[in-house]
Length: 548
Ligand code: NAP
Image (cartoon, rainbow, N blue to C red; front, top):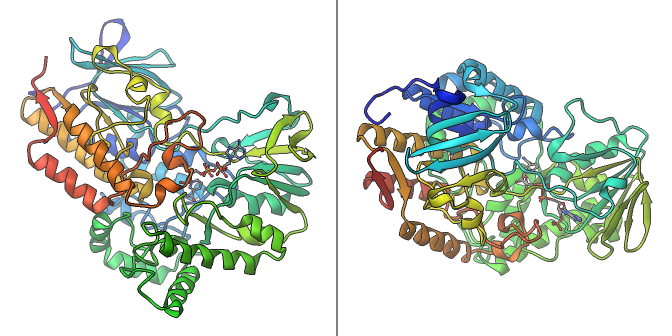
């Protein structure tokens, strides 16, 4: 590959497929990688565990699943044709529309012929002599590739229920992250939902509307703001489209990768009580993540944060009629937005229904799942169905489930035993030519994922092209650059309130997972500049070396 512009994939001896690039995962990242690499003349194949494309939007089919960011912002920006060929129908697209969009992209860019579905990558080993990655799948494929790119997603491995007696329940159980394709009819059933994160908050109003009775087990209440979802205002969309190039540029330069948050540069503490309240009210009326950007110090100053936390608490009290339930739903143990802010449609209202009960699983923890339901420290409950909305092994889960071995056979699991360590969230020292898309150490889950994915795909594919153009075969992060980056990621996180919450950002939801703040909170605009500067300096912090 080093000197030619195109290498054709082929099967070598023993049925080994030879590629320039093996990509793992066919969600937003893997699909764009395939398009870009193919266009640059590389041989590339994508391996996907599901039987369809779409990643997150393929798996998360629970009722009410929809994006928590404005639809026109949460979509690819790299192709005018793609942008012109699709019109979103709702302000926050629902899962079926998102999946239809991703399938539309797969067809329009003719991606399917290089995507191998129903194929889970089980291992990837760096062969130091051949200087290639040997990738193995659970279907028995062996692939030899110069580069291996993990486009495996940040919330793709579910947290498995580990309650005692799980296997004894006689009725059906569902996990929000692995919802049956045919849907579930809860009509007339007694249903228990465990968890109150984003997945639960979106699905609970739908399940409550069907079930005979719904009991929700909440360990930690979440802050949630209204989505005010509805049909996308076509006039507003026309205005957006007229300024699309400019809007997309601003997204890339922004902190979060989206414009609808409309950041206010004032401190919550420098304005009067009346002005602060007016700002919060205006943003509550707009809906969505706008609330998180009402002032510039909400996630960096505890006193500023307390003002928005109290505002949301008042809203909960105003919506939820039973004061005890309202109090139970009010977060008290961590600052606003330091766990992922939820964006809901009718969540708090659902607790005014006669067929809904909220149980405090913090003071009366679930002790076991029983054949007929579950028991807490205080009572036994009978259910016809149980829904686990208990989240994911986030950011590192998908990577740690693949047996990834770099130089000297060292596993990524060993290297990350005390928490993920990367250079720029893109590469790991000791693992040459292995890239991660939106990996730990990059803005990733703290941003508009599509914007961050496009930035990573562009950067990675530019780097691979640079290697080819300069007759280089290997690229590898130095330990020193990685150490400095990890220190910087931690330092920036420590200037915020985020470490105060037991969130999945810190791995706190998975017993035994090291407590490390995984994403980079410096902002996507700043981060992009850093990555671009590294590339402009001949890939500073990386060692580039000739092919074998
Ligand atoms: P999550 O935020 O991790 O929530 C999991 C919930 O399950 C929490 O309430 C947690 O309680 C509870 N839980 C876990 N184990 C438990 C146990 N043993 N006993 C009792 N409760 C338990 O997971 P998620 O709701 O699936 O959301 C994960 C992320 O996916 C979100 O933060 C978001 O980034 C993304 N997401 C986005 C959307 C969207 O709107 N587009 C929708 C869904 C998900 P604790 O808090 O006490 O641990």
